[in-house]
Structures are given as structure tokens and as C-alpha cells.
Image 1: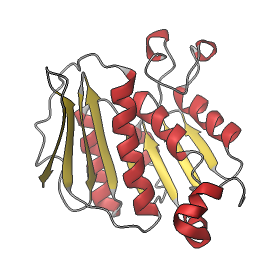
Image 2: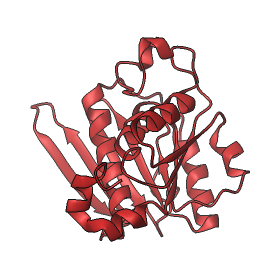
Image 3: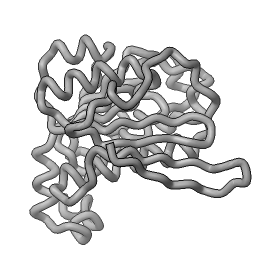
Length: 220
């Protein structure tokens, strides 16, 4: 174990690495953001990771959903991600749930953190409501085109900030998906490792028409 996590132990010590092994998280959605999150967090030493998604891999997913190959077409996304984690790390228990968030929610599983990797606002409302009911923090993430948003929700209400609609998302390329997931994963690791983070701040990342990278934040 010490050899596997050598560079992380150099970063924050054995005590913090041991702390991570006691933590449980749920990643809701196993597509673009979800597979990048599973890849980033699946070998970090977090004790248990639930991955929730009812959807199957389609050929148009593969270019931006890094867990999948052509051989995974028609397979359940959560299952593929859970297997990827198992192949990469013997120290993390990964469990796939082939269902939507509402069905997983009914299992009443206790986790330390929920990470949103869905692709619609109505699902995030349900996550926020459940998180408030169970006193569980959650990390919101969304991405489309050349922009994305991330927020660690603690006390702020998702519904008070976003207008809920069924807008069809724009296209997206892989690097922007990975960038948003990477920021979500960093927030998650810092929180689980008991390191300082800023909560209830909405981070906005974008490339403008001139290709300049924009980074803004808004206190909720």
C-alpha cells in the first residue's frame, strides 16, 4: 500500500492517506464527467465508491468518456467504470448501481460525499434535496461547449440559484469535460482528506471567442 500511494503520502502523509480509506462517496452519472471522476478518484485510496447510472455505452460517447472503448458498446456505464477502478486499484471498493438516482436514493446508503456527474438540471435538484435531507455535502459539475461550472454545495440551495428547464445541451470536446471533472475531483479529495476548501462558491470556467481562458467565482 505504501508503494502504491507513495507520491500521495509524500503530499499529505500516511495519516491522511489512512483517513481516505475510511471514506465513502457516490458518483451520480458515469458518462463524461463520471468516467473522468472515476478515473481520477478511483485510485486515490478512497475506501468505497458507488457509481450510479442506468445508461449503456454508445459509440458517440467514447470520444469524451474516457473509461470506455469500442469493446464496451452496449455495456452498462456504471459497471464499466467500477471494473476500471478494480483493475487499477486493489484498495478501493467500487460498486456499480444500474439505476437512476431516485432508485439509489431509496437504498438509504450513508456516504460522506455525493458528486454530481449528471447532464440535466432536474436530476441535480433531486440530488440537492436528498443531500439537504441527509445532511450530506455534494459537488455540482456541468460542462458544455467551451465552458463549465463547479460548486461544492453545503448550505446554499441549488434551486435558489438555477432556473430549472429541459434545455438541450450544446456539443462538447473531451478536454473541457476532463477539466471540470478534475476540479470536482480536487475539491472532493481535499474535503475527504480534511484539507481546507471553499464551500458554496460557484466557479465558472470558460474559453471566450478569442481563446482566452476565463475563471470567475460567485459567492452563493
